[in-house]
Length: 149
Image 1 (cartoon, helix red, strand yellow):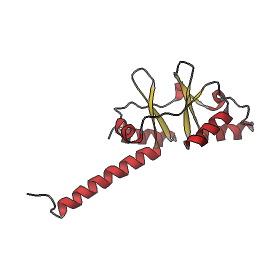
Image 2: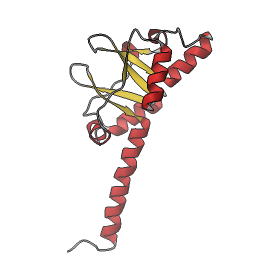
Image 3: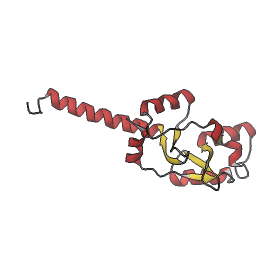
Image 4: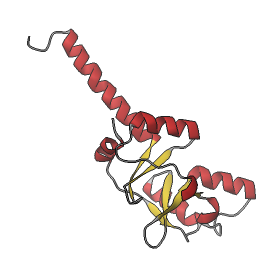
């Protein structure tokens, strides 16, 4: 299964925040959208990084900073360190990358490095379970001779 198939079923809407925003804005947006991460974009909609709940928590703990004045740029994972996917990437490879790097979100980008979607580990698990259920149902039908010969 490819990343594009997950995006087709879940949608390609991407929630983002401007690179000059502050952390409390990001937390408000994540809460309102019920998501765990936001893409960080500049004024030309270029990807500058990603900010997740985990990034905020770790940064606040380390610096004992108040989120009201803390800049997104100070807590986000910058573009240079960002792991991204392409639409044609295999879901099993994405899951392996997430597991190996201890991350829960991977932005999907096009050939111009523009974000076209975001895939979470939850999206991957949901898609894999749906695929397994489909395979099990067809194998069961085959075993029970529900297919004409």
